[in-house]
Image (cartoon, rainbow, N blue to C red; front, side, top):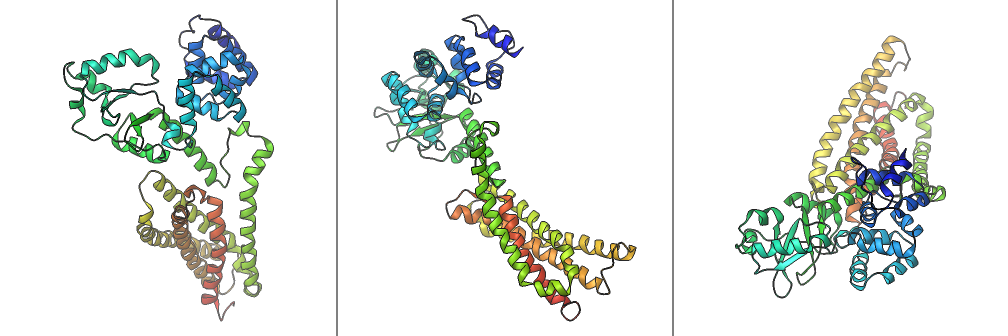
Length: 452
């Protein structure tokens, strides 16, 4: 049925079936092999093919374009939104991308080359050069007539830039304000009550997203060192970038290098390479746990009962650390906390960890007491001291886990790394090693003279 639907909408200029949107077509093209998708796309009218290629959800667009006849592929790329076209070319082989650029019209080639020069995760890499700019002395009527003239050649018209004679940005006027104003009013008067919010092309995409969110903007101007607009970042571009950023962070937090392609499209050996590095690091780190246990070998031999609670102790510390790490990574990402707030976070996590550890300590003590009284297990004549050791150990380890888990993202950011690299497995491994030291140190203090 999928092929029938595509065949019905793709044959020549015939109108698409009612209710079948571009998003539906893209979803169906994604389900096909690249060669099948290229065949279907090749039978579409240019306007519909370009609309499908312009959707970021069409992840196979680079492969499909490679399979189309080269003149047709070049024509489609030249009609795509420039920021999307730049993303597609960036995903191609360098030689093929250069061939596409050489075949494009000079003005399109220049715009795409400028976009490709910026990092993908920067404002310059996200922006489009298809914005509307009018002279600062234009009237509202002049600006509206300009919009009607150039609208078909612009990806989106959310706002209009008013520039002075030197090309510097004077003001940004929303389309809503323009429509509501009188035609003879000076357009610049609509923006005199506020300074335009702008970013440099090398601004990180997370900062761009925060500015758009904080100021409730639909579009954000990108300006050069002289203050002249060179592009615009729209809210839909930011949403696409944030989804990609969030996906990378989730993968890193799971102890995996960020995947370059969707899961099912990532090759077997590429997947092994992405996962083996972190697993090896974590394995080597866990060897320290064995070293810690060897250090307390004599204590373990005299009080074997203590080993029963090692998994309980270690997992509780790792869980509390992972909780704290998750909260702080997200808070850093959305700007709720900054690097300078580390001491405030520490002052919150220290008592929070103690209270959480106390709760688990009470549960642990009650569990040992219940098992002893009901006869499920005999912990010996010193079971109260053992329960106290476990309870105190939980307080210490959960407190340390919460504090360490909350501080690790700050430390990574201070060193210039992505805080999301503070993965849950890494935090758990860190707390495992220190947790054993804390546990047996407390055991020596409480059980000395009895079991130890």
